Length: 214
Image (spheres, rainbow, N blue to C red):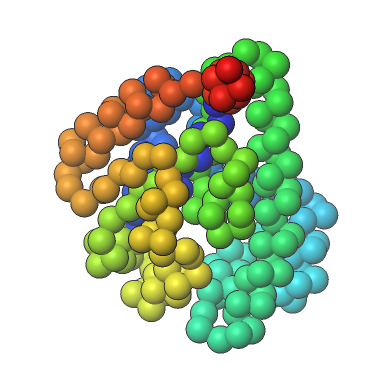
């Protein structure tokens, strides 16, 4: 089974790419969705977030206050960075374990391919865990405009999140497939179709190992 990473910065369109691949029959997990699910259902994680960020991180109905949490971890100060790194240390291992459990289940089912969408593949050194990586990229101003429209974020909020991610130009040469999402939805669909064709024709890890050892 090939495990595919789909990554890209905020506003790049990686979620749109993941959705298009799902429409083609791919099994795709989104790290943001998994993290949101765990923060809504994992009582131990919820308590750890409250202990990290204070009682204001929990709303009166008992759920976590996501806008408050975002304000605490995205910002220009060293304290924002410290809190963001501490929150990542709480959430990322749980997300990773959830995905590992799903991968093992799908491998046992004989599924040929599973993809995981994540903005932080290169940032946390997980690129070696994937057989192939698709990087989605777009010009920064376009990414800013998309993120502001989609998430109702202020420009400065988007810039802070961009600053927290590895620049795409630094990892374009490491990705197996790069999708430049700077055109229409039709353009993106054509690029996704081609990426799916390319990835689908690539050998799995066992076949690659046999070839290298031959």
